[in-house]
Image (cartoon, rainbow, N blue to C red; front, side):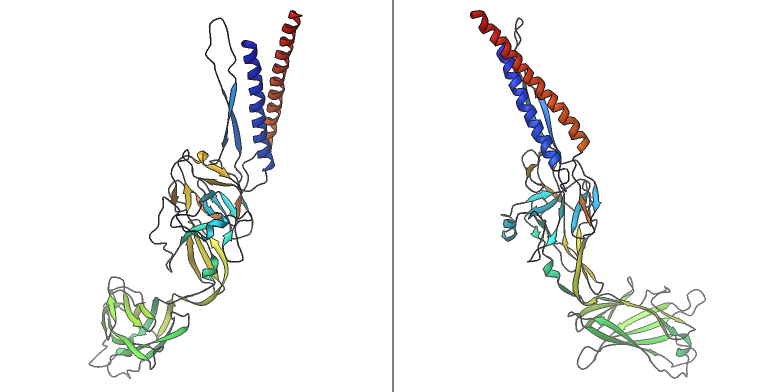
Amino acid sequence: MSMSSSLNAGVMGLNVNATRLAAISNNVSNASTFGYKRTEANFASMVLQQRRNAYAAGGVRVDTTKLVDTRGSLISTGRSTDIAVAGRGLLPVTTPGGVNEGGENRSLLLTPTGDFAPDQDGFLRTSGGLHLLGWPTDASGDPGAISRRSGESLQPVNINVAQFSAQPTTRIELGVNLPATATEAGGLGDPFVLPLEYYDNLGKLQELTAEFTPDVSGTGASNSWTVTLTDEAQIPPAQVGTLNVTFNDTPEAGGTLATVTPGNGATYDPATGEAQLNLSSGPVSIFVGKEGRNEGLTQLSASFSPYAVAKNGAPVGDLSTVEIDGFGRLQAIYDNGFRRTIFQIPVADVPNLNGLNPTDNQAYTVSQESGDLYLWDAGEGPVGETVGYALMESTTDIGTEMTDLIKTQRAYTSNAKIIQTVDEMLQETTNIIR
C-alpha cells in the first residue's frame, strides 16, 4: 500500500510540475505581450485517511490562477488611440462578430489595454480583432440613460460618425465700455454700432448687430442707453430684442449697471446677468452683466470700447484625430481646433478580478467566480483613469520565471527519482520470489 501510494505521489508530482512548467513557458513567451497577465501555478497537498501503523502518501494537486489584478507598467507609444487603464479595472471590448449584434446578444469581453486603431469602417479595434465599446454621447457629452450592470447600452466605437462637425453659438459675452459723456443732455445722441458674429446650426458665420443709443433728453447726464439687437441672418434683417440699461453714478458704484429692462422679445435674468434672444438658428444668451457689478457693460468716462467680446461654437471642421482623457471621454478633435466628446468609455470592475475567465488576445469574460460586472466612469470609485498614448506592459518578470524554472526542474527530477526508487524496490521484491 505504502509503496504504491509513493508511486502514485511521484506520478502526481511529475504532473503538477509539468503544469507549472507550462505556466512558466506561457509567461516567458508572453513577456513582451502588451496587457498580458502572469499565470501562477499553486500546489496543494492531498491527504489520505491514515492508520496508526501505516502511512500512505496522498500526493499533490495544482491550481492555476491568472493574476488579473496585477498591473503592468505603462509605456508611451505616441499613438492617441492606444489606451490603457492606470489602476484597477478593464476596458469593455467585443469580438468582430459582436459589432453587428444588439447589446443583449453581443459578446462582452474585458481587456486591460489595447492598441486600438480605426478599421476600414471607422470602428476602433486592436490588432487582435477586439473592438472597443462605449456609450455614445450627445452634443453636450452626456451619454444619457445607460445600464451600468451590463453591456446592453454599450455600442462599438465608430469615429466616422464624427467626421464633420459644427457647433452653433449658444452664448455671447459682452465686455463693452460705453462713454459716460455720451448721455449728457444736448449731446448728439449718435448710436454706437457693434457687429457680433455667431455660428448658426450649419456652422455658417452669421452676424448680430448691437446698436447702443444714448439718452440725451432732460438735464445733466441720463446714464441711460437703449441697446437694439438685430439678427442680420434673417431676410430682411429683423430686430430680436431691446435692452434699456441704466448705470450708477454714485461714488461707491459709479459706472456699474443699475437696471436692465428687456423688451421686444428679449428677456433678462438678473441672477446670471444674461439676456435671452431667439435668433434664426435658435436661442442665444448674451451676457451683459449683473446689476451693481463691474463686468459686462460699464459706463465710464472713456471712449466706446468693446474690450472683451467672446462667443462659443465653431464652424464646420474636418476630423483630425481622436483622444481619450483620464475620465474616459473620447474626444474628436477637428482641424479648426474644436473638440467634442463623442463616446464615454467606461472602466469595468468585478469583485474578484482573478476569477475572470481568460480568452485570446489578453481578454477576459465574467464568470461565477468573478462576481457581477459594474461599469464605472474612469477615475471614479475603485477604478483607475484611462490613459491615451500608452499601453500596459506584460506583468511577467523574467528573473522570477527563471528562478521558478530552476525550482520546477529540480522538483520534477526529484519526483522522477522517487518513481525510479519505487521501481527498484519493487524489482527487489520480485527478486526475492526468484
